Amino acid sequence: MTGGNLHVKAYRARMDPTLNALLLAAAVLVLLAALVGRGGSTRQLERRLERLESKLDLVMRHLDVAEPGPDQDVVLLARAGRKIEAIKRYRELTGVGLKEAKDAVERIH
Image (cartoon, rainbow, N blue to C red; front, top):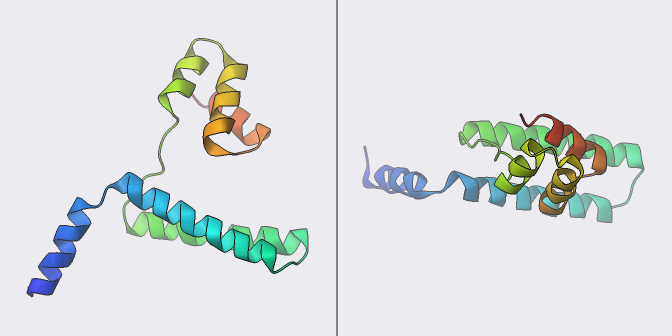
């Protein structure tokens, strides 16, 4: 094994999986912004977004990066029966829509 390969392996070992996930998410946001800036129909944008998400999933699997679980605040609120507050907090943290946040909170048990 060459010295260059050892350097790459050492670098990968130090990389935080959460940092990888954040960097990938940032890259997707940049690509999405570029797509929106190019115009096009809503359906075209949806298809492009689906392809980007698919590619992101492949990259995350290749890097062995797990999608982060729900925030502890959200879990505590959901388990305390404070579903609406949990949904609001989830939306604040993730920026997702109401339906997606509701579904995510309902999956917490």
